Picture: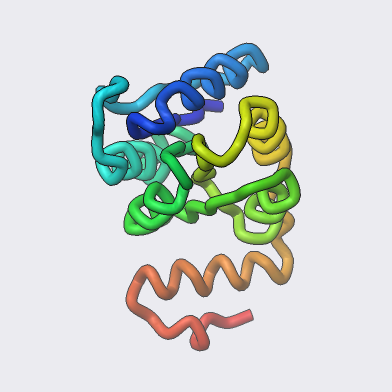
Length: 154
């Protein structure tokens, strides 16, 4: 499994640590974008990671910025991406099991290294439940296509 990771300057150090942690767990990591400690714009990293996930170059993506919010907004503009900002292990699990989130957005400023690792581990370990949630994810896809989600059949 390949996981694309991107960050702006505020999330860069945390992203490097998360990448190292994921690699230690035996997964492949693809760090995206030329970003260093000098200011860089989060929409560029979000677009790179989201595009890699949407195209199948990576199965999942992880984005980090100061709050995770900007990354989530930008990543969700890419068709086929379901990016979720999470703040704990429970929201990480639910974003995968109920929403089939394929991009995880995290706050590098508001969470410590241990919390970030635990959230990433829970997110990666959780699968999509399907069932009634699959219908809802299909409705999200309908919205992306400019369709009325109410017309999506059960």
